[in-house]
Image (spheres, rainbow, N blue to C red):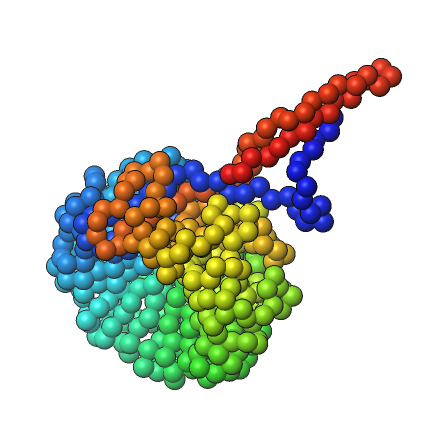
Length: 491
């Protein structure tokens, strides 16, 4: 038996392009942003963000009317894109949700920040708003019932940026703080280092704080993203302007210039294992981090540096002014490889995630018309100022595919998630009236300034449409040799 395909480079792996399963707008008549995305073990997907819309957002959820001018929101879809429930989250002031995460029991956590004195807390660690803005963290069960919720902050300003869970059901919360009290407890760094520090706090499944720490030096520092590994360690990434108190037994021990990214590993008790700066002579920011099943850790961000970034990677030189980057470290903090990712324009990196096979996905938005897409769902920039993008890279640093996602407006990719069967989800927000939705809950733009969007792409084991153009059967001794020519159709 023989198969014949159209000519392709046999020195390269034959990649099956990602195919669109469904895509939807999500929004009402005002602005709607999506910042967080997460999947559960049943293949359901959640998105979270900020909304000013008074209609279409909530359905069968904890809070069905908007509390103030801007509220956080959380919505759950089943694998087919059917909305199961959705809720506002907020009081009479401003709220925004920046991240969401699920645990093995099917609960979902929502993280963000708030200026409201009511509508936030129940059965949690901190009952009242302490400053102008506090972080917040809330736990819902799979049916959208609120279990507990807490403020997190001191007398100044806090911004919650991300949350993640571990295999034991604990939840971690990170962000930026300007407060000198009410942040740390039994942690690595118990006093604020400068005018603003990152923070990381661990809660058990009942919402009881286990420990909390500042992270920063005498400059301005923030916590952008956090993730855990199968051994219970937790990683924190962010941006720093501090020349001290950041690196420890790490890949890059010295602060270089402008701003650097950073990555730090703590064990489950909050003891620092190692940490590193990441950057060159330009401005560098660590935005996302993710682990794989082998205990490796990836740091993703954006950079303007010409050196100090890439090593044995897919793209070893800066192509434009602002570029995404991805660096892989082993569990001991030794860099394995690193790459730029981008074209001639501005390429922003927002977040990253991994799948069970060890591949890593990057998302953000780009102005570049080259260097982004290859074997993708959408291989050309759609002429808006920015298009969202999503790229898949294997564990050796080889790009598997990359795709734009957008229409003729502005399209921004903010987060991505992968389910257990290898489907990948992309969320963000858009001003485009076309090129976004297909077979989803909401197939037209609501008319507000921005609508959120959610896209499901099938990344693995995708059936490829083929056309039979020639077939023959030839008797060879006591066997029959079958030959056919298949013409692959464009997807």
